[in-house]
Length: 174
Image (cartoon, rainbow, N blue to C red; front, side, top):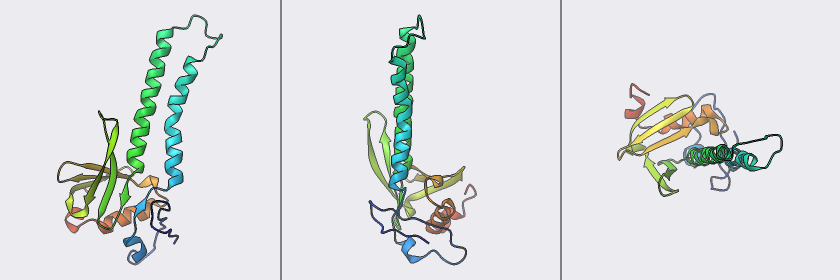
């Protein structure tokens, strides 16, 4: 098992434990997406935006190109890049703690985000589909934890299940 010092600068790395309870180091730590993966995902989100610049570069091999079609393409690709960045930022900002979950949620009209903290006892519904847990809070907050963003999906799934209250583990949808 590899464990880092639980801090914002060095996330905890998890591996699968064959048997037995979760180690105390993992139970008391903050588990989050690693910094290198966040950086990689942010770079990936910039690709459509950078591709939009190529649409505006003059090219003699496109005789009679329509300028309005180019403008539309630029805005389409920039919009896709912005949407992708916001989605990746949302997914990569999740933090599991002993007390619950924290995630930065984008505010659509303001162009900013706010931090939501949801204690394990404040979760009213949890579901798992694909590789993601979806959590619903008492006040309608929705958080998502994509297990593929962590070093060991199996351990993250086990960690979430261990931390969920019994009433949530007994849900039919779960």
